[in-house]
Image (cartoon, rainbow, N blue to C red; front, side, top):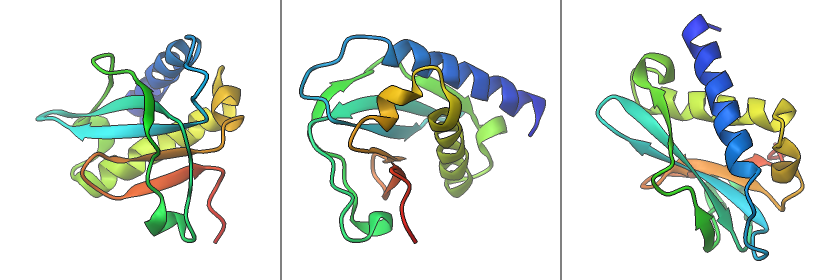
Length: 135
């Protein structure tokens, strides 16, 4: 892992620590990571959802439930120099970074104790990160 990626991973962990330490609506039962493309980076937004259903095939059927909260304008930025050259790499980098947080992040238990965690670009496919999809 490059030094730049390590630093961004650490910064993402601090951002998630802060977001997940805040009070959340009681109706929040799951989480979804929205990804947005900008001219120079991928923006990461965390949202809580009131439901979670991975579907029969989590690789194709998952869709986040109704939002209970968003981090809105408080988004995290992954520069393209770290995320990769094109959207498939951006998605994989983002998935890897969030999976890493799920394993050992300070407040990762809040995510793991939920019904599920998903990720995806707002205008693209969505993927289940937790519980880990079974092959």
